Amino acid sequence: MTTTRQMRDWTGPAILTYGFRPFFFGAAVWAVLAMALWLAMLSGHLLPPAGFDPVSWHAHEFLFGYLGAVVAGFLLTAVPNWTGRLPIVGWRLGLLAGLWLMGRLAVILSGDLPALPFALADLAFPVVLALLIAREIVAGRNWRNLIVLAMLGVFILGNALFHWEAARGGHAAQGYGLRLGLGAGIMMVAVIGGRVVPSFTRNWLVKRRSAVLPVAPMQSFDKAALLVLVIALLLWVVLPLGALTGLALALAGVMHTLRLARWAGHRTFAEPLVTVLHAGYAFVPLGALALAAEILAPGLFGMAGAQHFWMAGAIGLMTLAVMTRATLGHTGQDLRAGAGTVAIYLALTLSVFARVVGGVWPEVSGPLHMAAGLFWIVAFGGFAVIYGALLWHRKHPPRAVRADRENGRKA
Image (cartoon, rainbow, N blue to C red; front, side):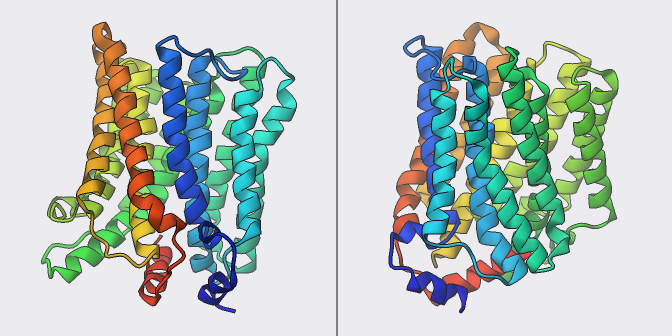
């Protein structure tokens, strides 16, 4: 049975025909709802809806809740192409999406009840996802992508540690679990983004017969840059305020700036769908440099502001870029960004900088935080509206299947 035949044989809801559909849509909707709840908490109109303190709930749900869904949508779509095995569709996919939703409800409803059952309910989804991905990688002998499984494992460990720190009464938003989970997320952007950004850029520039093409991914310099980033992130997890950590992050920021410069992003402005991949990756070195500056010269951005270069910028914009491109490609649309897509990219970029400037300029941080939240809602609400019909629609023409395979192999 082929992937296309398997999807056509499914007679249930169209959104369960491929992994990217329920998880990209769910991630966007949750990004809107969670931000609306957070803004209500900031304005004093809503009490924290969880056993976490408000900031910890906010950090947990955007890192482990939102990003967890996007990672699932990406991997459930890409891994079948990596391994040549059939994707998970139908009610099995629906059950997995239900586990993710159970985790979101568990965190909201935890309150003052025992922490362990709610933590287990939240962790059930990523653990099951990791087991499924491991099975597919092993069965398909796709050893090259074991690194992706390893990063997912670290991400899960960060989530578990976050719950443990919160249960002990600590401020988990500033704990080891948050930094470990965020570090895993940044490495996913650096590793997977380091494959897809130059590959998609090359494809687009070749079609335009450009004389300048990106340097092929995963050269010696790329490997060195990734190694330096891993070391810097490990130091940041263990010694978040250490001078050595600041210096390592600064070196990582410089190296990943040079890495990005090798991918010819300056030649892609005619197609925002490609340019946004470079913009999303740019927040990886920006975040490293901002954190380094805050560690070595405290008070410039504020630690939370500097951290949002990664949380809202690198993760937020890169995942939005991947969701828009993958949805277009896997539903047979032209790989071009329309006006609405460009608008949601701009809204998210404005959200990131409003939040960062709020840390630099604390006198007006309240209005800037509110503006950042509203721009975020516009970005992901816009995705749900513009791309929702594609995600819920059953049509899957042959050219979309070809795009699936091309995009999956390059990821």
